[in-house]
Amino acid sequence: MVVEFKYIVIGGGMMGAAAARYLSQRSDGVALIGPQEPQDYQSHAGVFASHYDEARITRRFDADLLWASFAERSIDRYREIEDASGIPFYSEAGCLFAGPQPRSDADYLYRATGIARSMGLDVEKLQSTSLQSRFPQFAFPSHVMGYYEPTHAGHINPRALVRAQTVLARRGGVSHIDAVVTAVRDEGSRVCVEAAGETYHAERVLIAAGAFSNINNLLPRALDMRAAPRTVVFFELGDAALEVFGKMPSTIVFTDREEDHVYILPPVRYPDGKTYLKLGGDIETGDLTRLEDLQAWFRSSGNSAERERLIETALQLMPALAGCPTSSAACVASFTPTGRPYAGFTGSSRVAVLTGGNFVAAKSSDELGRLGSVLLLEGGLGEDDFGSLMIPGYR
Ligand SMILES: Cc1cc2nc3c(=O)[nH]c(=O)nc-3n(C[C@H](O)[C@H](O)[C@H](O)COP(=O)(O)OP(=O)(O)OC[C@H]3O[C@@H](n4cnc5c(N)ncnc54)[C@H](O)[C@@H]3O)c2cc1C
Image (tube, rainbow, N blue to C red; front, top):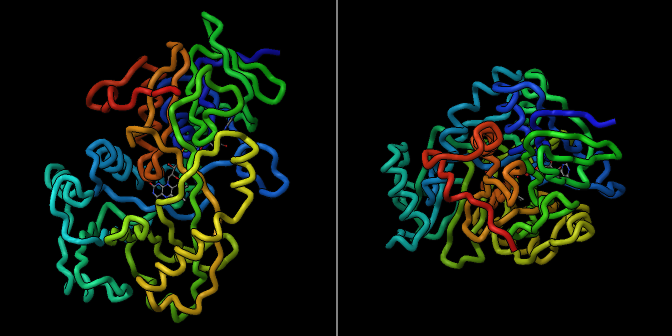
């Protein structure tokens, strides 16, 4: 039996669930097709997602106006989504960038400062001594200064945000189908989508399958996008460490050597009942192009050399972490050559793509979802929405 919809969103992750919610506000006949998080990673033979975690940094301070704008638009709506869904996901803990004095446009912090000024963001600049006294949890090198965004910044729980978007999408009439899509075909007057032995038809389809967008015959041509492995380290905090780190902001550290750049999430309680401080970096190379390789990586606990490097960096920056038990996990970040997301139509005017989070899209996923809905409903994005900067590229 064939089931007919107006719009189908493929992938119920951060962008897809948001897109489905927005579509439901303006149309009936919407389906969201995508699987839940697997209970057991080791025996799971399907796709995974990049939001299986409890904390992602959120901030407006960014060196790219596109990302800063998408973050601002999303953050402004967090409380509304929490209230409507009854699911809390946002902690306004603030966000701190620490790094050497930026000197030119080549420096991230220099560009971000200019954009913050143009957007009227409240970002405090802290010289080394005030940085140390405001944030005594850290042992920053003496030449490092800070940029602190106290409000409209902090961290979100990505699993909870996806749950909230999904609840609201369903409430808006979206049919949520728990299945993996294995084929998408533009048949001229409609698009045919196959998932778990069923066939679905729609007038338009949005592919929001994250790092798995190039897998499972979703697209006729592979997107020019790198599915990069990322390792994160968790420090399990006892009461003494919690006392030290309990009130820290989300923190991003740009030290002199690029390989030492890290981002740090404040202590967050995880489903196992324990509280962890999480840390990750941005230097791992590689491109996971096959389903088997992505699955094997998601089932692993990341790269052991990267894990050791992150632990060493963490202990230098936060000496009070010494003695805390550590563990690690694997995730995948989807990078485009432009550093910006893809939100546009493929060769077909009925099939659009929304992906390319570039390691920073969790915070902005609500706005990206809105843009995905506009693509399907209106057939394109205008310049207020940075449409021409997000045209998908192919290999
Ligand atoms: C370690 C790590 C740390 C990060 N930290 C931050 C941060 O601090 N702040 C921030 O803003 N961002 C951060 N990010 C980035 C952010 O998590 C991602 O950009 C975001 O999850 C991307 O959303 P998405 O919807 O594109 O993909 P996902 O959230 O991965 O969702 C894709 C969905 O598609 C589904 N899917 C895949 N294939 C199919 C198929 N064939 N059929 C049906 N469904 C399918 C999957 O099941 C999944 O639910 C981080 C990423 C990583 C890896």
